[in-house]
Image (tube, rainbow, N blue to C red; front, side, top):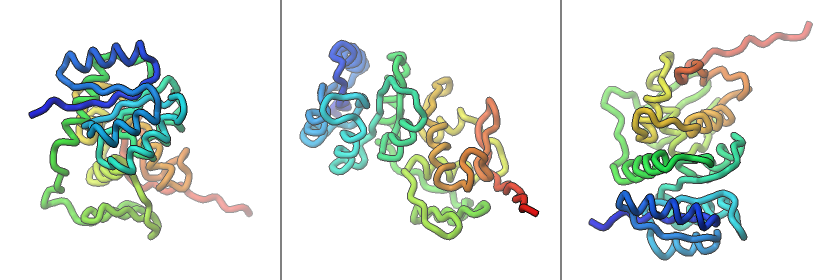
Length: 242
């Protein structure tokens, strides 16, 4: 079996060299590109198993690069790197198809753990719901049809990214219960215990934006401080003007 091939698209040549050497040290074959257009070309021609790309690239930025790669390789795992910490950037990255997001500066060990988790998840067959799991999940205005991976909110179809869908299902099957961050990161992203990530928060923010009437004051997806998240429909009472 050939080693996994990782395509690294990073214009900082010093950082690219450091990342390449460390990824090669744990057994990956690393392809490098320093501009967005070269990265898109390599993704098309070299058949990488995973793509790591910076957002701030010369020519076309990482968002456009990922969008172009997704047209030819919709299933290749993609990990985005950036020095920007804005939640909007993370939400947009996941919306266009990123599988994970790492903010600079980061540790090499965390990067290699995330790469391993993405490759492990990509190589395993899709999870099949247990027989006891109903084919349709409902909570408040949200209905999820597992067979077709379809989500409806107030009867209107809502398109979600694969990971956002998996996260919603994980919370719905445990509705009313608090599900810890550790469990969600392990179950949805295959992270090892102890690996922290804002990936989960960005996906919850995207779910709230798509499913909640008031995303900043959610009725369905609730944060349990320092623990995790809970799915339970608790509508806010409407105060009518007299």
